[in-house]
Length: 101
Image (cartoon, rainbow, N blue to C red; front, side, top):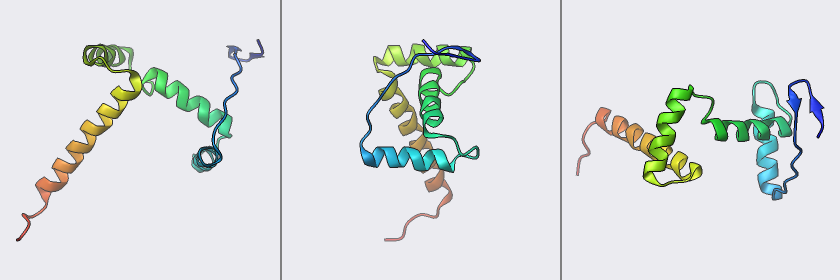
């Protein structure tokens, strides 16, 4: 395996459709650091595996919740985003005047 300053690494090759590849290239270029696409994609994988680097105690608590819900990580993250969206919508509707009919 190749070595880097941070240790040994394993190389993966993936295929992305051209549309998805362009989106990755564009998103990587829009980061403040203007990341190369490979670094951008590695960050996505690291974030997914560590739930965005949250503290271990929080990660463990959410992992337990995920297992109790019998969801894989992808479905669990979608569930978290859906719950957040519902809170955003409730907040938006709470501050708006009632609709006239």
